[in-house]
Image (cartoon, rainbow, N blue to C red; front, side, top):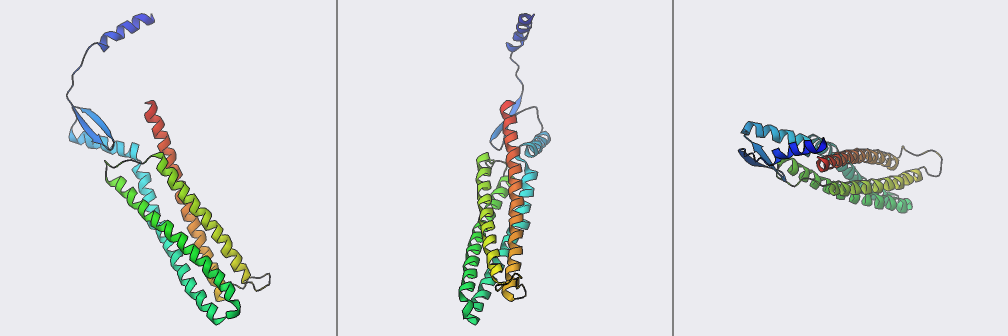
Length: 229
């Protein structure tokens, strides 16, 4: 019975069918349309954009980095620079605590450098994502791109956590040898505010890393679907 069915199907394979068709370029793929109108091609483009490019997720990631990440890092860097100038003035007014204020200034300089480098990288990443969304023929992302982004973000989070611990120790030294922090001093208040801004930056970057992981997971699923379909 199985041989009969195979023989029955083979007769259709031998028949050639010629249909009018037109090739249509979408990103790095060539689609072949049979008797398709321009309106129908636009609908196909819109479907593929949602299904393959994940434009909604890319758009949310761009919006997140532009409206939150860049602003948060800018605020943190600006306040760290303001504090540096402030602690330099403290060192001149109170020479007996000069070593302490110098330690704070060094920590602030390292923090500013770390934040500014990551902020510039984030700005370039936003530009690349915008180009990907705007240009349908732009090269799509590869899973390796997401891995690199995740490595950078995780390394940045580690650096921020280490600097948060260092600044926390410096804040504790402001206790002046007692168990109660002297948060009423200008130095103590400034350090407390800086730590709050630093924690805000850590939370923002952590949320972005989660979005990147979601995008990478969706892309892996898409590649599996393309492989077996």
